Image (tube, rainbow over all chains, first blue to last red; front, side, top):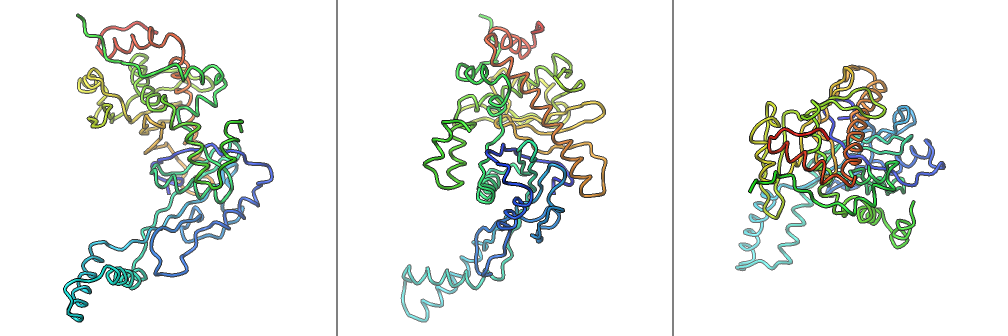
Length: 208
Length: 198
C-alpha cells in the first residue's frame, strides 16, 4: 500500500470535464457500482478487476468516511489474474491424449477433440486455482482534479484509465513534459516553440 | 475542452477511444515528447554541478538537488546500448562523462532533493517524467487520515519541486538562444572544460 507506507511509484493524470453534479455522494455511488466483484463461476479464468477500499482488498463497502481525506478521494484498484500453469496443463493434456488414443486405437487425435479436452481440463482445474492479486492505490485530488495511481506499469495504468472512465465517465490525460508546458501560464509562447525545436547534440566538438 | 478535442470525441464511443484520442492529441506523439524529458535530466545533472545543486524556484524556499546513486544511459536506434551506473556517486565518474561524450542519452536517474529539513530520493524517467521509488521523510506512524495527508503533502511537494525545475528548464529550452548559449555551455561541461555561467 504505497499510499500508506513505503516508497512510492506513481503516474498522474489530469481529470477532464468533471462537473459540479459529480459530488461526493455520487462519487461513492459510482465507486460502489464498479467495485470489485468475485466472478460468478470459480471456473472462470482471466482478468477481473474493480475498486476496493484502501485498507482491505476484500472490502467494497464504500462510504464517505472511508474514501475522503480532506480533498483526496482515495481507494484502490484490485486486479485479479487467474491463469493455469501452462506446463502443467500441457502435461496433463498429453496424458489424456495418450489415454484417448489407446482407447480408440487411433494414431492421431482430431484437433476438435483435443480442443474439447483442453477446455474440460481447464474447467476442472480453474476452480482449484487461486488468482494472482494486484492492488494499486489511487488518490484523486478533487481540488486540482489530478488523479494519481501508485503504479508505473503500463498495463496497470491502461486498465486503471479504462475502468476510471467506465466508472466516472471522465477522461484522464497523462501529465508529462508536454502537458506541463501546455498547462503553464507561458503556454501561448511555449507551445508554438515546441514545434521549432529538435534533438540537440551535446557531444563536445572535436578540435580539428 | 478545446474544439479539436471535442471533434475527436464526437466519433468515439468508449473509454478506450478516449484514451487513444487523448494520446493522439497530447503527450505521446509530439516529437518533443521523445527527448524533452531526457534533456531535462541532462540539464538537471549539469545544473547540479554548475550551481552546486542550489536553485531558487518561484514560490519555494531554497532547494538543493543532486544526482544520487544511479544513472542510466541509452543510445538511440533499433539496437540500443544501455549503460547503468549504480552505487556511490556515479554521475561524478569518468564513465558517466564518457557516456555523454559518446552520444548516449540520459534515460533515467536517481535524484535527491532537499528543501528545509526535508530530503527526498526518487528515480525519474526521462520519457514521461515518471516518478518511481520515491522515499519521503514521513514521521506519522498512526492514524489513517494523518498518514494519508502527510504522505500526499510530501508527494505533492516533491512533485511540485520537480515541476518547478522543469519549468525553469522549459523556459531556457524553448528560448531562441538555447543552441548558441546553453548547448555550448553543456558541451564545455561534458568536455570537462571551464564553462562560463549562462
